[in-house]
Image (cartoon, rainbow, N blue to C red; front, top):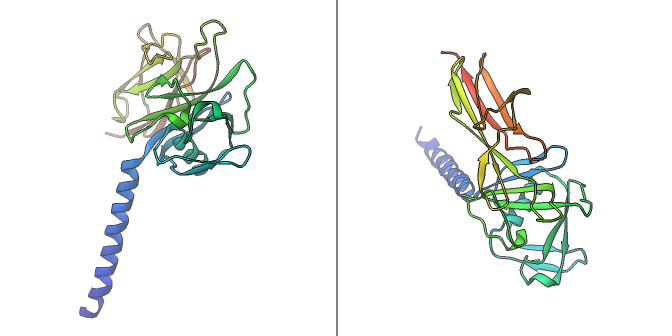
Length: 239
């Protein structure tokens, strides 16, 4: 048995090191969601890319900060999906001059663009200038805008009263619509989709449902002329 102890110690050390590395990566992860005109392109947690990107002319631009754009770049490499960036010298150095021109092979017409929100609030500068943390929620979304106010489409966000329930127990789903300033209002004209079955929200932007069988259920929300919500997963177990 003694001859196996060094191997066991080495194995334990390797496992401990891997656990620390995984924990560190999770600690640096930022939530990123990308909503295209026809569906969700990406939803997940990534460590924002920090380093050098090349612009459309092959010129390198470098940042040392974790940014919303770095989160999008990491997400595009994780799935992967296509990402097109254009550089302008008008907005400063580092990554400040990058503009999101194309995502997943979708280039908006003049009446739309790829907008970025961080923690439900529209960014006032380019995504390469917005510093993020592991607590940040980054949303990149295809949106039209009001030609007078330039406001983008409201974005939906859902919460559930529980992530795990007993079969047959009530689950409350609340839907909020966020404007560009990050102000939330109840989404009273929204649909909540539970495994593809639609339920209309009430006057408070709420749906109460019961999951009738064991399993994991996907939950998301949509509403006319608003950006779909993130997807939640609720697990129902037998009592």
